[in-house]
Length: 197
Image 1: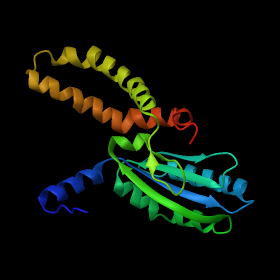
Image 2 (image 1 turned 120 degrees about the horizontal axis):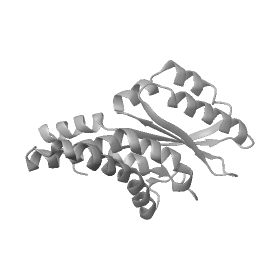
Image 3 (image 1 turned 90 degrees about the vertical axis):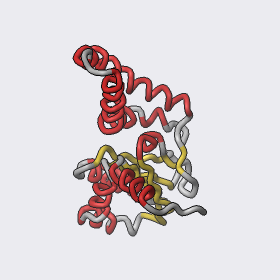
């Protein structure tokens, strides 16, 4: 394993801290407690979704399975840490002791990749949906932004130097994709994206 240290790694770490982060908590309910656990998981996801800095929270559960995956997305690691340390979350976790067999995995992702990763099984790594689904969802998300950019922003930049005009496109589009559009689109299409998981 290679460890990178020095200014470059410190700068990369700071950038990662400011990126959106997704954390997946994988749990296994006790036998016969699946319905009760499902209610608890939905309550936890709802509480996380209303917590400051949260971009979305959902529960993935395949019918007939005791495995549950609670996915929480936050604007950055600091917001996630505030939720993890909150009294509200601690209170909810006190309630799960009698209905959970075990928490089987905790996984995190940062950056744009967060919108396309969920667990396949509790013991396995997080994997994305098929590439064609990622492509289609990204296209659906980015096309209206490009259209609006061309219609309303480009005409106002006509007198700018080429390098400045070119810089505005990724700056505006990527910022909106990361913090506004993709959280909404991926949440709306989550069932379709992860069907079969």
